[in-house]
Image 1: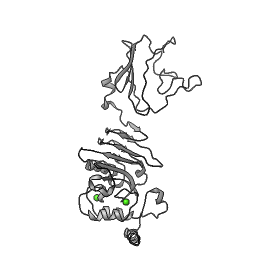
Image 2 (image 1 turned 180 degrees about the horizontal axis):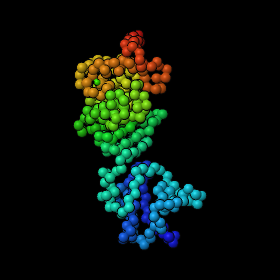
Image 3 (image 1 turned 180 degrees about the vertical axis):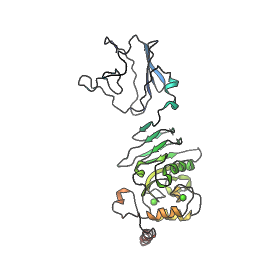
Image 4 (image 1 turned 135 degrees about the vertical axis):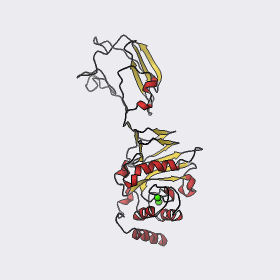
Amino acid sequence: MNVSNQSDEVDAQIPYGQWVHVAGVLDDATGLMALYVNGTPVSSHTTSIRPYAVLAGPEPGLGIGGLQSGATSLSPEYFHGQIDEVRISNVALLPSQFLDASATPAGASLTVGSLSQSSISIGPAGTLNLPHNTTPSVNSTNALNIASGGGLDLSNNTLLINYGSAPDPASVLRSYLAAAYDNGAWDGWGITSSAVTANPASYAIGYADSADGTSLGLKPNTIELKYTVIGDTNLDGTVNLADLLALTRHFGQAAGWDAGDVNYDGTVGLSDFLALSRHFGQSLPTMAAVLPSGTGDDPLKPLLAGTAARRRA
Ligand SMILES: [Ca+2]
Ligand SMILES: [Ca+2]
């Protein structure tokens, strides 16, 4: 809209239920006004209209997600959905420029309700966050790549990686978890969890690989990443004899979480045994409330008690 209240517009429809990249361009020199969806021009024409004011002051002449006067009763027209990573440029960019991933601002962060993507790639300054859910969500992808410095916050949710005929990514995923784990602090980059960070003494993100055995109940070529109790090697939510046996079978060997490496250093050792035994008998929060905390207990006491209980059964 210009100073004489004349206006012009370009329109396009966008699909429901998915993220799209929308770019609007007005070239002051030529008057070309264009709208791009995911980098493809969808609507354009040449206009003589120019914005009536600079982008400053009480009426800056720019609204994103609603009309400038959207807060008033005159035009309560808000965008019904989520908007993220808004950028404004002082020149009319070409698609190759506004789609340049390297131009993504540092610290870009995206929160999504759930994930079902063919692949997930997170840049060195990006974070992708799943919300904490009362009933944890089960998400899926075929490939996960996180650049050093980036983060995927699973919170208390599950992610299935169906890697198909691609190389088994277990060791790469372990490196992402080791980076986030940071020797127990859970303050690093990689596969993170705000739920674990809130209580790193009790919980962790465990992972199980279908390649490690059918007892894990996974589809072939699948790795499950799951928020659970430290020591729950088979990801059933409880640390019990099955987990202890998996660990003792692989003691001293190079192995993953599902074989007892619960500190992500790639081998099953004494520190893994002590961590598991500290949490023996414990379950995820719904049951944890009625079970005594193992923190600070003699590691063998709950371990032996649990073993005895299993024998009676
Ligand atoms: Ca278990
Ligand atoms: Ca270990």
